[in-house]
Image (cartoon, rainbow, N blue to C red):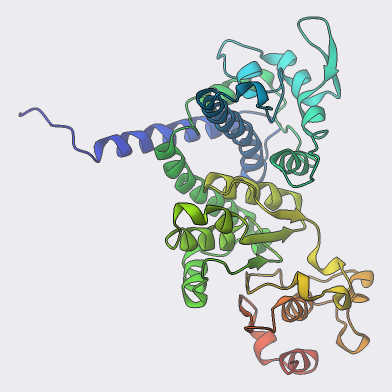
Amino acid sequence: MPKRTTSKTDKPIATAQRLGSAIKSARDIMRKDKGMNGELDRLPQFTWILFLKLLDDVEKVREEEALLEGTLDKYKPLIESPYRWRDWAADDEGMSGDDLLKFINNDEVTLRDGIKSPGLFAYLRSLQSATGRDRKDVIRQVFNDVTNRMISGALLRDVVNKVNDIHFDNSEEVNILSNLYESMLKEMRDAAGDSGEFYTPRPVVRFMVKVLDPKLGETIHDPACGTAGFLVETYEHLKTQCQPKDWEILQSSLSGIEAKPLPFMLAQMNLLLHGVEYPDVERRNSLARAINQIGVKDQVDIILTNPPFGGEEEAKIKDNFPPEMQTSETTLLFIQLIMRLLKRQPKPGRAGIVVPNGTLFGDGLCAKVRNEK
């Protein structure tokens, strides 16, 4: 049999297989842990581990750039030692068992040098920048609600070792991993059942973005962004219009809000994986602000969203809307919010919204909201 030659496509295929194998192995290990109860536990657990590996790999690249530019003495690391991935996770023979669990979980730990310091999560939750709009603030927000769900330090060590096979300083690997991560999000949506209101099928998202056709320089917002599917697809759409000089414009074009901690964390990871430097996603309820307080400065060119429907809001949320337009039905409240958030001048804003049939054809308040101008 003739010897097979290596084609240009072999390397990406081999990389995808290696990354897929690493992810599968890590998730198989998590299945053995008694603290894991299905995909809704495994995915957030795997995500925060990936998140920290990504941050450290990006930091290494920035440190190398600072070294080449001769500015390393001015470089300030995002995460200090001993909390960087390279300090506690990169050595496959490093910290394990109860020591690893204590380092991650405890508010205070005694390090090997005998110094008492915050545990990993406690440290990450204390991070804060001077501006309030920095990756440090993203990290703090993400880890405010993150818990380590694994109860076996040995199994956690094994998962960390598998993640060591993933390299976020390699653009090819990041591109492949972002696709694999999208598949994981889909699996989570399928596993979520009735809780899957956060996740919109990718073909629907792609179609809506294509129809609205966002342009570079326009502001795009999702007030119920879930795992950031609309924001990611819009980012990819805008990248095709981008020149190097336009990078800052692209990065500042997207914003989102998500109320629940799990999809909020997944949104941050999803956007970072796709290349968004500082994901502008807030963790709060978009409906918690009085609608008459929304002014021109808050308005955007485009809204793309799948607001949660079928649920009900608490009484104090309804009070944020005019008396004649109040309802506990979440979808109708979001539509009123979206109408207020869209620009009127100099060019009317536009929106793509996923809503149930009742919103489109129902009587009463449904009809009243549809007739609003």
